[in-house]
Length: 499
Image 1 (tube, one colour):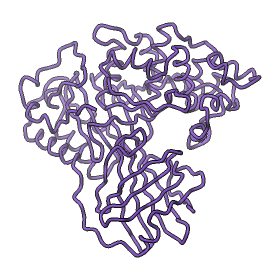
Image 2 (spheres, helix red, strand yellow; image 1 turned 60 degrees about the vertical axis):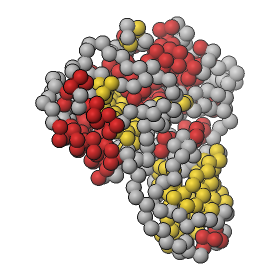
Image 3 (cartoon, rainbow, N blue to C red; image 1 turned 90 degrees about the horizontal axis):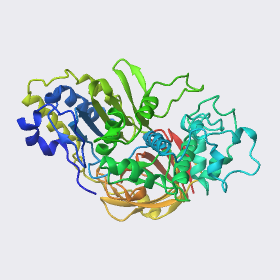
Image 4 (tube, rainbow, N blue to C red; image 1 turned 180 degrees about the vertical axis):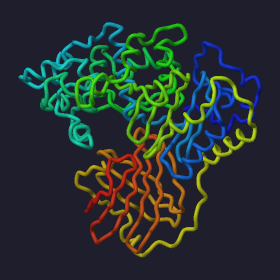
């Protein structure tokens, strides 16, 4: 993957007067955004430095923060252990992309919003579907008004069940009906997997292939990872991985009414419809809009997308701004903090010292912590080393784990995660051992320490795939008792017994 440009690496360039000129009316980034100082684009470096500092001081789970104004990247910060060379899971911001692709497919005439859902899946449709299910349309899926019994219970239970099934589309289509289509809205991720699969079926290619041709490549987005189901269908609801600067391009496209460098990528009418505030109350028809989170709030009009763990795309059209946040847990109110930095539509006087402070904090954010001294392991380490403990089905997605202790400063972790075998070196000195250890071979790391004679604290951070686990493991004979917490909310204070 190509190396990304960090603000800390372009400090000298940011001080160049040539980059401080106001943006021309027409600018379209290719692989990377041009850069400028915050003050040159009307933002206060000191306020942005405070936002970065809050992430560090409050240990927020922010992975990156990118601020675009007038087509310039004025802040491009990465927080350890994430880095600029790794695409990041967008979680449900993927739904925003699937919504965008739906508009493109409609404009191209490959699908219509009034088409029946079941017509796209003659092989997977349940036999003798009831009249309600036969009335579900593509538009019902887009607006999350399918009427399927999905998204009404807490914890996205249907999504977790779908992920454990052999055929995800068949599973989603077999969900029972709860309401007539179009009468109620519910946050149903399997419904958006169906929507992405509709786009794929109509185009005779995967959703990713369709997106590459009609959205990503026209915007100069070249490096994309999008997870697939067992049948090779892109996850329409989530798990699209982009670099932050590439996600910002999609916001920038909508900021310009769907137009990019003289070409209408998404119809203007579709952009206007998608970014309008929802027309109904949450839970009722029109209550969830079109997955572009349109709103009129204290900061004026805004739209974008949000995802589990703190993923965020925010567009402020009145300010000519795009903000992208990636995270692995509690990301706080980063967009609001950035909004406070906006002081003018015109350039502000240069503030060299404030800019240097911002650059220093960005540089500090990317650094790994120093290693700490390692004590000798307890005697039990030898007897539990290499033993594999299996868990019953549980919300953590962890099916089994094994810890091997052969070195004073590093251990080895083997886990089965949603049925996939993963292997991690584990730093015992307070520093992650980072590498392509996570799902999709993306950046992940682990560290741990003994906290008592038979208790081990494991920090398993999947980084680019969001999920960040803290596992308090107590060894008891041939079993382990685990208290599991996951920063984005998959499991909180969960108690799991492994044998």
